[in-house]
Image (cartoon, rainbow, N blue to C red; front, side):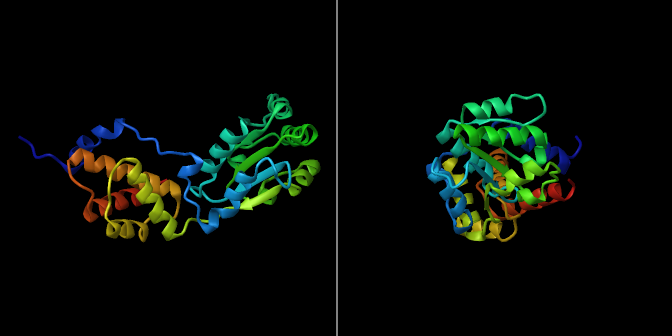
Length: 235
């Protein structure tokens, strides 16, 4: 009988990975910190926006998608991707619209210009999310540049350790699991500062503990942090 290798052991531990867990994404589930306050305020203030176009700008895992989801539900907005030949501007003429990850997805400059004109003309609103401020987007069309300059841009900073700790506790609570504060502190001081990283770490810890039939311990957390760090470094 051959000895089970570490790789084979880890493969067997991945069995529960077929099960997924969806965290709550409603307004009441949002943990508001100082770096998120301005973005939350603009979402809560809809439809009394200072401009018909609002852009939430922040790093990966900063909470942009959560806020966009809240706003989309509240405003009854339709998601669009302004490409040439799309119906994005027609949709924008009919009601509020959402365009996520603008600089990553890319867009047709003329179509986005028409989208912005449509929401302005018909009294609707457009929410966009981006990792970068719009002045960093590679926009050539002068009219679009002018429209983007007139938009309200709200910056979201990286989450601090206090917020990350709250998020981790909440994510475990969503799973009806308790985690020791010392383990939370251990994780927070060693993880990437993003809400996406918190989600990944909690998810892997939960599943690995389930696979091994053990509680969540500091060594288990160290193992997951190491795995997540190695995975991130290989991308």
